[in-house]
Image 1: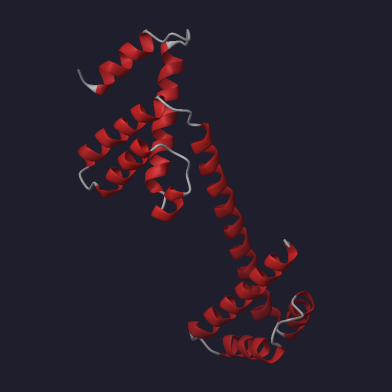
Image 2: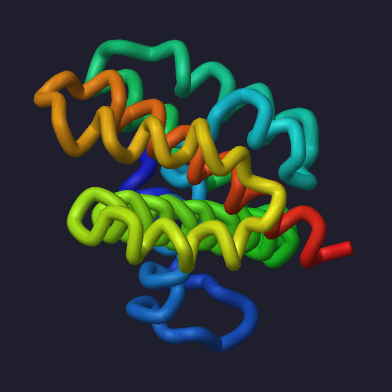
Length: 176
């Protein structure tokens, strides 16, 4: 019996009185959750609370290159997840998403600071130095001028990295 017909039988005999459609939606949601697990890095995956059997299934899926094998493995992951409470897993994934979103916002802010510095020069530099009093004034001014004068991406990248470090230091001291 293949997985689809087994899932069909499971949906018909659902003891909780759910409709077949509802049970199928839940199975697909669990499978999507499993796909999100497979997409995580190994470091992130270790932080997700899950039984060893699920972790082994996810690790096996990460190694698979055959589309058919991967599809069967994803169905197996969904089946394993139906037997457990997926809420802690969903919460861990949501937390990863929030961290990723915050990091993306931080990078956008750094990019905006750099763009302002390159466009407005010394006028924007005053605002940056007021916001980050610990910044090395001379190095920052020098990087801004070099990035404005040169087409070399090296100076723009260095300016971005310096602003990123300043913003990171500000965020760390602000959260303490």
